[in-house]
Image (cartoon, rainbow, N blue to C red; front, side, top):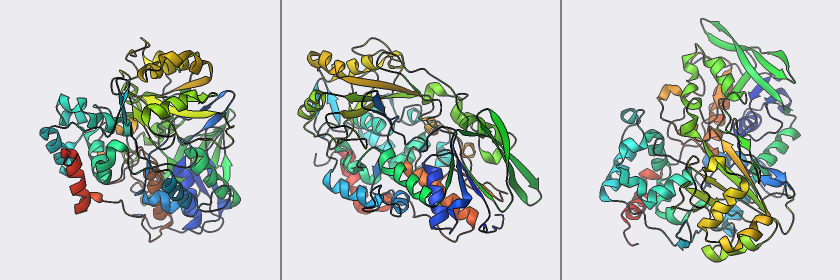
Length: 532
């Protein structure tokens, strides 16, 4: 490892990307590294910070969330970070607010699956003994032996018809063609949640959407400490200076309003880059138009990674994740309602009040569609009498059961029509459709981090030979932890900061419930449905 020289008070630190990884890195720099906030600059290509933890819109035109990440109590890095961040009103830490809220609003789904117009209370997993043995084998098998195999390489076709798979894949967004290594990591990482999986026990929520509850307090805290935010600024290249001792970033090439300029960087300065983006190229439709399918050229994240990785094998292989859109895309939708009828009907059908039940999946849906009705209001400033819910579909190129079009070709009105069909609410459809705004969102790379890969396809947090450069985000390699989580991004940020600053500190270790005998017994009993 290259010896580290601590930055002085005038050394600059540049964070490329305005998502949760960069925001977390900025906090750790200030909190744990005693770095002055005024020396930190965050460069973001869009007009907003938050990355994939986004939420926007209004009651008139409709609210939009591309999605939300699952949170649970063993996200130790996440809660460590937010223990230092006050809520917007300053009454407590964000961590304390989340734990207090989840004491009040505990997840206990009575309708994790909704089949044939009826809720399914505590669905059985329906696993065969062979399926269970395969799950147990996969949990123990070394990743090196699994290699680039897929989940479907490891299981017989019947496994993908079980309710265990339907609940697992819609909770975490897995597809049969995704990486067996990533699936294994999830099985191990969430062993402690298997016993309550059919009721989503242990899932935690924020008071509002994750942008309002997590990103906005972070942003406020950083601004108060002088951190600079350069929005609408696309980083197009990093110029490296190489010598026998290693390499360092010498220039950051940026484009602002069509003008290209260079930011000079010294070896005393630090550069932390978020690689790739699972929400790059997202596009929105409307109530009467479908969302377009865009690609990696419709944004700068993949282009930057490709540019800097050319000839630098230690920077990973972005094409492994960006060149397989047909295997990584799916769609979400956000619906804003101006009449309480829909929420009242769902409450009566499912037995859960909004915010209590969690994800509702329609296993008969050819789109494999799911919806979730959060506690209201879900947005800060959301007017009384307005409700918002979110949903998504995994199979977007297959015609629907009630609307005979692929989800990818459907307008918001047609998506809502399909959902109302699965709920058997056609008699109320006209009134509900008149009182709602449904905005579809196509995301071409949303599960790209799950694609089969070799270990070298992801970059290391601190590449060999790096004097002042580190990588963060979903496309870096972290042992034990799982991608597609806030925890993964925050852990990568903590590791990057501690390494670049030469701090003799480590992030909290990944929780390992799989070595706890009680957790193992409860998971074993749940898989075998002992006592069910």
